[in-house]
Structure formats: C-alpha cells, structure tokens
Length: 189
Image (cartoon, rainbow, N blue to C red):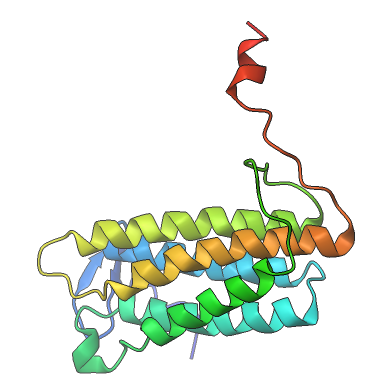
C-alpha cells in the first residue's frame, strides 16, 4: 500500500465511515491539532524526561490517537471509536496531584522557560489548549457527534503538562522565572 493516494489533492479528505469534507473543515482542524499535540509530546519525550514522565506521556499519546479516531468519525458510536471518558481524565488528575506534591506552591505566574524538557512541555501545553478550543468549536456545530469529555480531557491535560514542565525544571535544578508583571512594563514608558 502506498502512503499517497492522490485523493486529497483537490483539498478534501475522507472521514472514517463518512463523507469527504474540505481539509479546512472544523472537524479536520480539531483532529489535526490533536495530531500536532501528539507530535509535540513525542518531541518532549525525546528531551530526556524522567522514566515516569515518559511512561505517562506515552500513555497520553495512545489516548490522543483514540481521540483522533473519534474526531475523524462523524458517528463514533456506530463505529466504536468513542473510548475516552471520565476514567481517563481522572487518571490525569491523579498524576497532577501526585506531581504537585513534589513542587513548591506557586505564588505568581511563571514564564514558559527552563530546560529543553520543560520548554517542550510548555509548547505542548500551548498546542493542547488550541486543540481544546478547536474541539469546543466543533461541539458548537449543529449535528456534530462529539463527546464533551474530549474537551474536559484536554483541559486537564494542559494542566498536567504545565505541572510536568515545573517538575522537569525542578529535577534539573533550573529555576522558574517569575513573570515581572504589568507594572514592570509600565515603567518602560
């Protein structure tokens, strides 16, 4: 089987068990952004994260593939692609709680910075938030069958990625950079 089919050369793509749609369709934007997030997590894993974080990110990558399958299917119930639910989001929450126990409490906003792992995780967090926005937009479209749980999962995942970026910095001894605030910028006027 060849990797190219030429069927998308005119700007359309086929949905699983459904029609062909424009490549800029809101559904394609949603699962395309989830795919981008998955790739960003692969980059984060390549930066030397701890074994524990690597295992967690690998599990999340598998779950994001499942999310992409649901998003690529106009009727996920019929085709059995709706698998993510509250149990998956709950696992993310338990990981957040576990990692937060190792961190100092935040008293200010911090800049997305630090070592390569932390920066890659911050970038993945930004992509995750965009994926969530794309899914919210899709959910607001008439006659779309998309689980509300997908947006909840991504919301929690962005929280986890933030916490993991802090963990990565702590483990390498990199200090977090506090945001200087609006007043510091006003003084430059």
